[in-house]
Amino acid sequence: MGNVVTRRVVDAEWLRTRLSDPGVVVIEVTNTPAAGSDRSTIAGARTVYWKDLLWHRSRREFPTPRELADRLRALGAGADSTVVFAGEPTQFAAYAIWVAAAVGVGGDLRYLDGGIPAWRGTEPAPIEPVPDSPVPATPLPLISPRHDELVVGRDDVRAALGSPIAILDLRSPQEYSGQRVSPLTEQFDHGAERAGHIPGARSLPVQDLLDEHGLLRPVTELRQRLAALGIDQAQHIIAYCRLSHRAALGWLVFADLLDDHRVRVYDGSWTEWGSLVGAPIETEPR
Image (tube, rainbow, N blue to C red; front, side, top):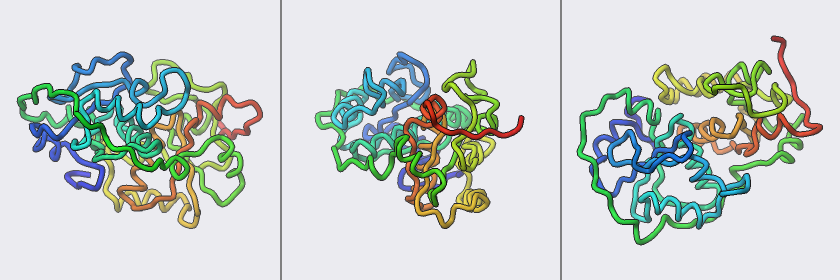
């Protein structure tokens, strides 16, 4: 994307010029369990394991809006903050914004293009970290939940099979074809009982949305890639991946960069569908 800035997507240069602003709160969302809030890559940022922030403590569902707002408040994000989520991998930041919108937590929430890997790659000049500030007096505002317009479940996916609704698979080609159930970045292949894809799903690997540096591609390139999928006339689009992180990044691209609000994300994604008794799947010849 270079230095293109949209309503929610910002780049490293945008953040660098604002990093000393106490009103800008950076939250690194990582895949490291029990990540310490002070073990950040970006100066002054707080670090959190994605499940600790975005899932219920014991049930496989989102936290309540109040729980999420309180967790973000504990990380320094309040009603007057500009909150920049930096993911590692980058899609974790998009997932945070998607979950917040779905459950009904508002505020000025931004996605750092390329996430923590892109920040490392820019080799920014050292910046004095912002001193720790007290927990904000007022949490992020609670707004109307958008769950029904942003999230679908397995019954919705079943109903979409064979319908005009387009289904997009944002996993890797190896996952889509049935060679694996998790991306090659995982240490071992896990995440579902079966490999393959939802019948009729079109393959859109999330890497096709990113350039060689992990940054979002220019809008013209994104439109060209999506045009080949034949989804122009679809009234609705269901996106999924393995755990819905990559699908959430697809949602953000459609909504923010393309002004296309047809996408809803299948929360359970392949982890659920690939293990459901009786759920149909398709594979490709190896």
